[in-house]
Amino acid sequence: MTVHGERARNLLHEGKGQADAYLSLSPYNRYYLTGFSGSQGAVLVAPEEYRWLLCDFRYTEQAASQAPDYEIVPVANDLFKRVGALAHDVGAQRIAFEADHLTVEEWNRLTEAVPDIAWIPVSGMTEKMRMIKTADEIVLLRRAAQVASTALSKVLATTIRPGISERQVALSLELVMRESGADRLSFDTIVASGPRGSLPHGQPSTRILEPGDYVTIDFGAVVGGYHSDETVTVVLPGSSSTAAEMRQIYEIVYAAQQAGLEAVKSGTPVSAVDRAARRVIEAAGFGAQFGHGTGHGVGLEVHEPPYLSWRAAPDDVLQSGMAITVEPGIYLPNIGGVRLEDTVMVTDRGYQRLTTVDKAWRVL
Ligand code: ZN
Ligand code: ZN
Image (cartoon, rainbow, N blue to C red; front, side, top):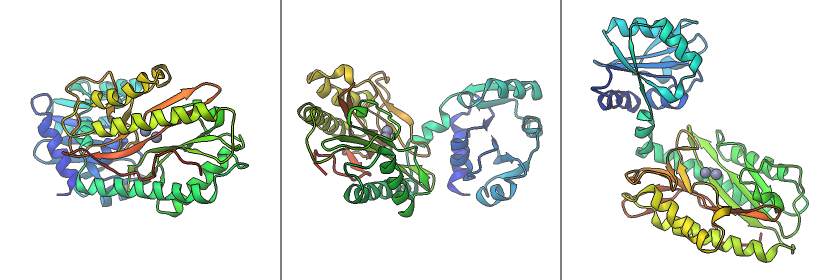
């Protein structure tokens, strides 16, 4: 059995007592549990090694080769009926389904097609398993981060200078990431320069970079399904009217990121990492300008649990094998912004950086 089939077996074991089968309709969980990367399909797992992957004509051949632990069931527009029939065949009566991955419309169709089964809503079961990465997953995360960090270093050295637009920055970075082995981008690259830097998720615009600009670039690569996530704020040569203020907030965000990273360690509550970073920014008087959480998990999705928030429960703790980001920022409307982000692996002794661009203040 492959690692995917083993995950499905463990999942069923986890849910024992609640339900006697598990239905997944989420693309990321589907990939995690089966190895099948197609965009459509349902996974049904039942005891005694019953594992089905239901998908339509476009994907049956791909599914058969990618998911050897599963019996492939071709479906047309009868997906839920087939799920019900399979469940009946093995006597499953209580089926757990991923409540946060089902639309109201799908729920209506499911319960209409299969009215005699007790559907048990569950949340985050597969996601919880996904938080702890295996050695193979860490290899891919590391590769994704390496591709992205190396590409950015190249683009910083060759392309980014006053006179080019934010969109050109994003385009060059995308080209180099893809040339360097990225399957695709983790997300649309964020480029926010000068006063636009106050937009935490600024889309690259036609704005032309000016001397002295602070340019925030948030970017990542996907390799083998796994994401990287990194943010730099770089300074262009030349002077600007906001130079003193920007330099000040840069140093605060840098110190906050260092404090956050130093708090990372297996066993630490995720909220303590947020607090460590936030405390630095609040002490400098910019607490209100740091309106987002300090980080998030990274894996098959660029944003996944755990979420490093001040609102997280105290028993929400870091564990060895988690991949997380630490990304504080300060955003000053009409002036600019700074965010610094690294993706790191949580270890027993602290953390190991995956993204590698140096975050210390520097002029390009
Ligand atoms: Zn990011
Ligand atoms: Zn992030």
